[in-house]
Amino acid sequence: MFLEKCGQFFFLKMRPLFFFALVLFPLLTAAFFLSQKFSELQALEERFSNAARKEKLALERKARKERFLNRYSTSNSYFLDQQIESFPLLLNERLKLEALLHHPAFPESQAIKDRLSFLKENRLAFVEEKMEVSSQIKEVEEKQRHPVQMDENDLKHVLSLIEDIPIETYSPASGSPQILIKEFRLKKQETSLQTEVFEVEMDLLKREFTEL
Image (cartoon, rainbow, N blue to C red):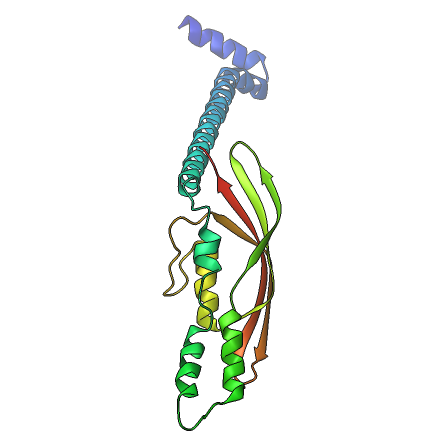
């Protein structure tokens, strides 16, 4: 009864708006405090989430780096000589011309002989221009000595070997170092026998990783 009378007294003596504000003040204070705590909790959860995301990315980068080094630290130092420079370009054309040369309809054709002579010398060849060696990597710039001719299949096969990726039916070879194409020049042209080929010239950057 006493509290009820006190409440009636304050309600009568004070303006209703001020009275209600006074009554609601503890509730508003509690709501503000809880809102602050909730915001702090959200910020803390966000920091934990960001930290976990960064840790995951760091682990993924480390795993990619380890896979990369494991892949290229055992590369074949003679890969360019054995797989690229020895690659037989325009082999199908060469076999067809050799068969035609012995056909009665093309007796001793000089044009076929000249084309076959060119095809025998039509090989990729590179010269080392610059080398940098550190404790973990050997980097060599390889410049193509002269342009070569290729057909579409040759181009796909050679690029598969150089870039170490499958291209259609062509697969990369094991033991490849990391090879980057620095410059690539491609031009379609017609041969002396009126067949279309691609003239190709490229400069490469070869990297061999010597240790993990």
